[in-house]
Amino acid sequence: MTAVRRVADVPDLIERARAGDPRAIARLISLVEQASPVLREVARALAPHTGHAQVIGLTGAPGVGTSTSTSALVAAYRAAGRRVGVLAVDPSSPFSGGALLGDRVRMQEHATDPGVFIRSMASRGHLGGLSWATPQALRVLDAAGVDVVLVETVGVGQAEVEIASLADTTVVLLAPGMGDGIQAAKAGILEVADVFCVNKADRDGADQTVRDLRQMQALGGAHSEAGGWRPPIVKTVAVRGEGIDELAAEIDRHRAWLVDSGELDRRRQARAAAEVEAIALAALRELPGAAALPGLAARVAAGTLDPYTAADELVDAVRRPLGPGSPAGTPWRRSPPSSPPRSA
View 1 (spheres, rainbow, N blue to C red):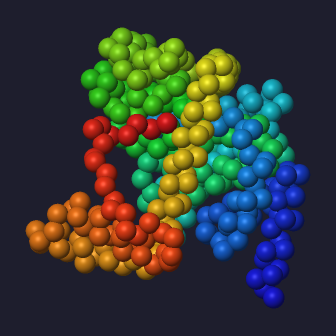
View 2 (view 1 turned 60 degrees about the vertical axis):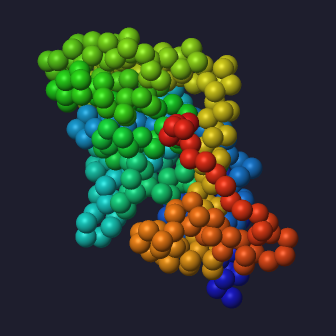
View 3 (view 1 turned 180 degrees about the vertical axis):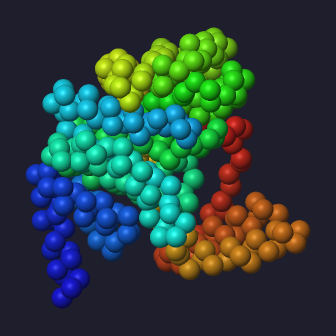
């Protein structure tokens, strides 16, 4: 009886979320975070209503002002009459495992605005600056009819750039005094920027930070020009709202370029492919044949088996329980890629 009732509640939740009910939206995101048994039904019901929201990622090192900048952008988009969703990924509490909610402290001015939905999500140790549930939570907000989704990551370092595979536009924030030009040039996070934002521009060293970024762009690379797009550099003082309109204008200009160039479709297809692959891999790990992995790993570690043969045996073991019609007799062969795969 309970299971039937839970399934019956899903259409009601979807309908209420589509109408903008914040409780229904929150409940759907909770189902995502909890990996609920009805998650697949929720995903099927949401799918026809997604693909409309503009997804903007904001990331940067701790202390550059991502939360304040996110709040300022929310104000700018609301002034333009657009509905806004915010997914603020916080570090996990070492005691409760939940989000520390620091972002909500900085966004109190939007707490009572019915046109803004803010959700803090715990990273729970997930690397890359995001929570594992962020992609599906984004789908919930998209289906709920928001015009813009702002995804703010945990403060990240040089290589945690997962936000680039999730957002349509990635804004990388920097601040004066966060490192010299060499540090900026080697930081992998700068490679994913569609827009650079030098926040706290009222501090000494802001102009030097801009010069460092321009020098880095002059050296070439993916961060300099991708298919005709050269990431602009915007100076802001988010705490006072200075430069935020210019930042929003550059984000919208990038959106127009994405649409005109076809890059938006390419990025979203790559995002969907990564999402499907992650779900498929998780399902494969649950199959009985996956239990062979520890034994194979022990043989590889002992030097009695090479890793490629072990991989063949693992794939065959996973395929075997699938039953008639599965390509169990087909050996798995795959050469290692010549270079690491790039983020979308």
